[in-house]
Image (cartoon, rainbow, N blue to C red; front, side):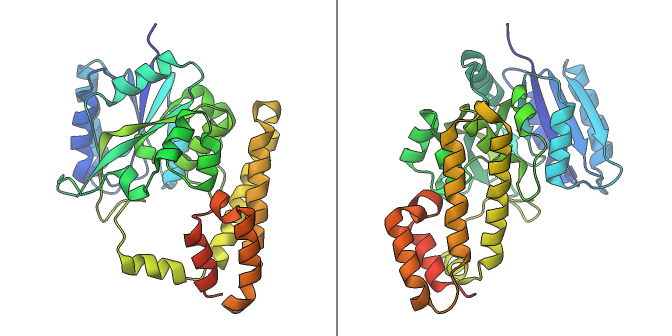
Length: 326
């Protein structure tokens, strides 16, 4: 029997692109059973437009659950609330400004129906500008996703990959509703998509599709987006102060470790050990102060130990610790 599907769409002042996204949802080769919408106190024409679009969905036989927040929650809390509103077995996160490929829901739903232990999937995306013109590189290409990272995700070793860096973009994510029991609430300091993905990986059920299933729109009003960076931007990133950033990463990973411990035997001990080792690595980096030559012995020891490779971006993280300003 097919699993029930819910599209979980969050909006906030999204009238400019919303109709195009809605058209793509109703044009799916496998129609969704439900579209759950939470509008985060929009001040533009989005609420009125949603009423019109909801009527179109109803005419097409798709249920719509529409809620408008009386005040702005922020995108993480809004998505968390919308996920709780959904009734489907499979939940598909949806941004207001993208365009889904016609086979997205069918491709991902088939994966969940054939793989009962699968908890979450993310995909690549075709990046486009505000006018809908394709950009040069896909989402995974901008992220520089490697073959070894993809192989690890396919082999069930996604936790190690996602602990190092997030690869799951919310607009591409589909998840099994049962994941919410372990994943919600999303803790402070985490974005909902990266948290859902790493929790699914810890539970042994995270994978990806390495082909684009949406057009991912890049424009000035993106909450996050994935723009290209030139050499000047990369150099500024290497040089910028990082103490506050590293302190934030320590807190995030301590929160993750606490959640993993609270889930007991559902989480392999290796996941808790890897997270504890990342906290150790970050604390060591946070303690580095003073001139670069004073940092060098600690950096060298941690490089030999493999900490920068396991928990950072390898030589780029080494350079950041050498060049950063305190």
